[in-house]
Length: 408
Image (cartoon, rainbow, N blue to C red; front, side, top):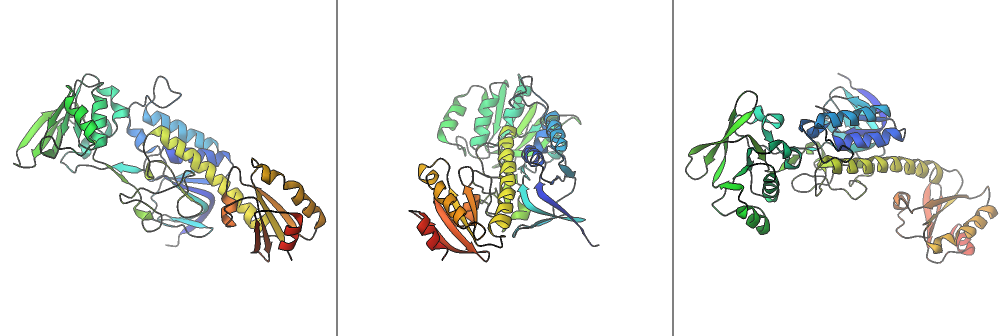
């Protein structure tokens, strides 16, 4: 079967809070934008019954309700949606390709917002009680719903113990299943001491989940297996929180995009990856806090950076490198006095060589993208371009005479 090809300015992989926000920014910038989500638009947030810490919603919101608003806003700005699985990508070069079963989507920019999935225990019955049926992965999201209840936490790392202590503000009892010997945890010593001293926390050592049990509607117990003796112990609980790590959805980007050992993508503060024109945002990237609010921040930066990248690409290709005339590019920073005082010099040069030399001014105050493309690391600088190639570069002390010498 021959695949179809569709062309877009931007293709966003992943439809969680980060991807939807990036879509809103790209759509509002009037970029032809496609968002691909293989399952449920809204991502993991849609499985959260109550979100009370997202700004602007003092009465809280369901995760599904909040994500529906995100999607509605993205559609308002013309973002198109495709419900399919991405099978491969080709990200090098000016035109990127996102491959699905039936269609190859070509784009100038790709934003990776594929998120992650919580690491599961693999115990029996686990799949039946995920998310709204008793097994949760976010104490910050679901703690209030467990007021006055007995909950279990699986894990003993920093996240597990700190989130477990947070749960004690709501739950009557927090039972922690730890796979190590008594007193041994994977968290830092301060958190360990605080947890052991917390009267609401109870620890069951040398255990790991063997089975999750309950009714068809909801979890009501966890069967723990002793790692030393193999003995089984059923612990009645109202809900269970798994904090044994996340697995980022980055398999198709391995050996293409830079990532850390667990597989989270590495970006700079502009959400740029190691490949120009490819951005990453949300839970798929290495970051300190994974929440809807932080995903929105990532998505906003990625969407804005994508628009900036495309605008700079057009300037670079058409105005700077695409001119038939030889040209000079004056790179400056509007907040630097030494740059501003050179504007009359550049204007004098432009007037003197009108019709012979094309002059382009690039202010790097908000973005150094064009400077990076011209391999300029400091300003003020003047770059002479002829026959679509960089011929000479002038930095340091700049004068009319030196610019004229540059083009000889």
